[in-house]
Length: 225
Image 1 (cartoon, rainbow, N blue to C red):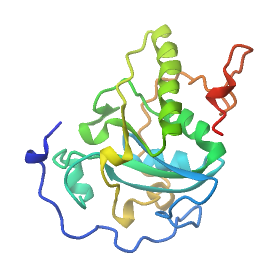
Image 2 (image 1 turned 120 degrees about the vertical axis):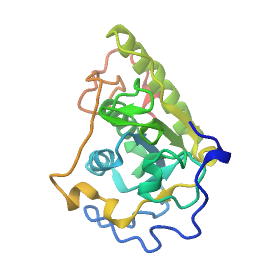
Image 3 (image 1 turned 90 degrees about the vertical axis):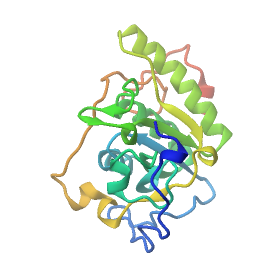
Image 4 (image 1 turned 180 degrees about the vertical axis):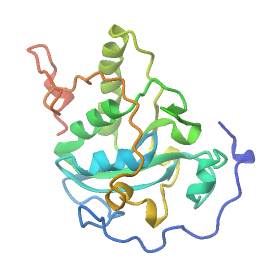
């Protein structure tokens, strides 16, 4: 990982000054969450495929792709791909409060969180796994999900979770990518997807199709109120 002193210089202007509405959901891709909604930032490798999966989830209001967790202001896609901005490809997800458990569960299951700075053939710190949270509630949920999922992966002989977990405030601004990258796989249905998943379900009771609740499951894990 590069340092701030090694990063490319800042760009003076945003690369997406006038965002267009979401091509699938019809919403403002950078709208602030309303009452009963929240925003979370997810990095799970190439952001095209991550965004596509996220916009299909019930309760997701809007998604946008961009860059986060680095140093260079207003980075371009090509600059970020060099690894010299310090950012990771990130999806901004606005969802209803009740959908957060499903969003986090899906994030864990759709990529390999045990792979350091790599997802499949995509290699580099720009593809690192990360979650940037915006509330203490999200932080607690993510931490508990890591504890739960780590046990599943360990029992299956998988590696340790290496996902970077930071507050969005600490990670720094989310810089939207160029318009052609927003909802890329809606615009290019046969485009590139990379999902190097572990194949193991994340045990978050009641939050998705792979959930298998048991009498010992703690209801506080999904009760976000």
